[in-house]
Image (tube, rainbow, N blue to C red; front, side, top):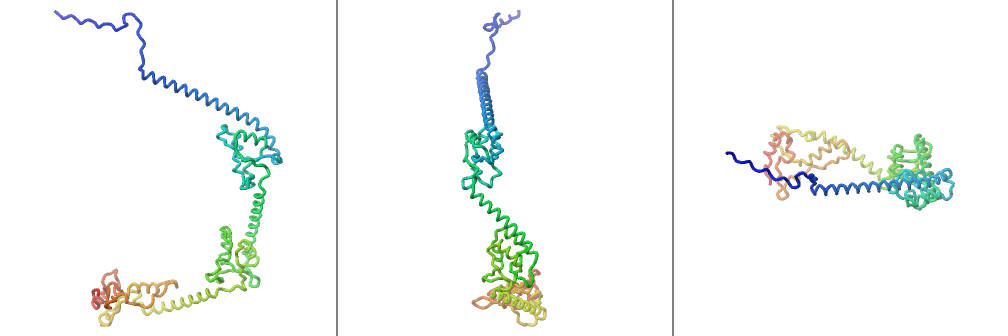
Length: 381
């Protein structure tokens, strides 16, 4: 009464008692493995080549040192006595004996120790070493470079260095002598010379800055001498000064006079200063109310007496003159109200509040301002 079960599936090909086939990797995986193996073999070959190159460089350096060391040792005790020895830079020599690769050492850089005349520079004696001719040839064969510098050196540079050294020694002696001479001022009887007042404190700075004329600050605009701005030094101090500052002009105390034009200008300034002081005192006393910006008394405003307008700019300049602490502030001249009137009709050009009738602008319109505004035309011409 029940249906029959379905038949079993057929066996796979090759099944039935035989060995199973090995699994096969995808083609993409096989290609990646082959590429990785090829890259690994290439890196291994490169490594072998690098090792061989390093070993070759080590052998080459060992051979170089084995051949060079006896030459250096034989030359070092009496290298300076060798007439045909050669100079090389000391830093390069140390590198050539310590570094492995020739590319790291580089050619012999003898241009660094050569002077402008093409010979070994005596100023760089501490930066170079002497080697024997055989060692020099061995170095050039291996590294190249140059130029070849013998032991003769440069006579021109040696003479210049000697002159510089002697000049420096002489300058140091002069500085010491000048400092000692300036510590003792000259008496009234002995010979003395004029120099700027700041010379004692600044002469060393001037010398370091290359100043050649120690008396230049005493020369005035007229070509004369500012004797009032000078101090005296002894004849011994002047001799040292003249050696250190060769362009200085000798100014003997007894025979050097002040510039006549400068003296006249100074007298004029002093007289003007005295006159300004007297003028300030008189105007402070007579015009104290205007200086203090006080308001006009009520009786003056109501008396019907005439009032006068002053230009506020002139009043400000006048106050600066009276309150100045120095003599450089000039008097603004006589007061004028010309700028307050129009040129065509002679009437007031601006409102009274824009003139000095505005006594206290920070407090608004005062009684004086209101009175002036009532008694003068309130509008422009």
